[in-house]
Length: 168
Length: 222
Image (cartoon, rainbow over all chains, first blue to last red):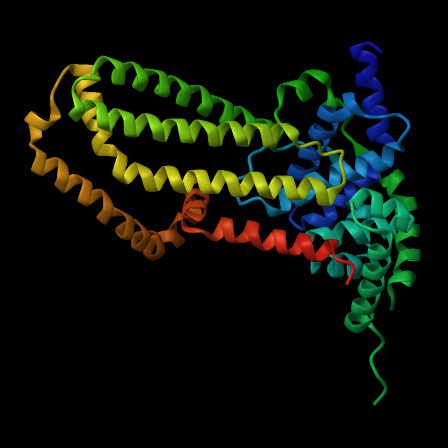
């Protein structure tokens, strides 16, 4: 594959999976500037690693791994981030008014995710996106039974936090 | 409201995202992507540059040591500095090796452990360098004056002055800690300074250790 072809393929795959970029950035950063920075950092890391992408693996799985690894590192880094890819006034992902004003339930969900540690943020994102416990375990590098336990705990925590108010 | 209920809402919302999100493909051009550096690449390049400079210092100190091998008052400070430079060089090579082993496509728990390990090593090295620098500046002065200008610092300043400065170097450590605690909050306007302060004073190391604990807990079934 020639360089322009590789570039074209990369852009097409990112276009097809831009939702992953959006959801990961939203889960790890509430501030818009930080979200833009993180989206750039993830895109750049994806491009750097694209040469080693094994086509036998689903692109979404590979992209999630890289995006989550970058996001967790980004989240933990001190406040010395510098823009690496794009000018400050241009965004990699533009959202229309429809997504900018998220439904109440989605806001509630993001609020819940915000309170989690960076690893559990990744876990819940993968669960919400419909990955199986086996796939989640592979991506996170933990056991399948561990995933099941953690999901169950997250469900309980959510019930406690946002459960129906008890009748007086 | 429970997680499974919200998962259904999430799936509905997810379907709408494709249509409402626009990716700026122009910004993913090859030239732009190839020009930019990831955080890890910037760190590796920085470490590489430090390693080259340290290697030059080791060679220069080695040369000085050989030239002045019959003059212990110059040979001892140079030997001490050369030893420090070798230790720093080894630590830098270890950091570069760790950084180059990080593959973001690998499982998250594995990669995050490697990143924390690299962070710990980097902070420990930085702490060691700054702590050592307060004591090393007098041997450095002796070697630099002799090597660059051919001057004998012992005759120029006297042994008492040099000894007093070694003690001063020791006294600076608690003073620097006190000043950092007293005025550290004002560094918020200077992110790099604040990061350096947090590296040297411990918060960043504590955060790294804390994250390792979170990682272990995350990997545990119970």
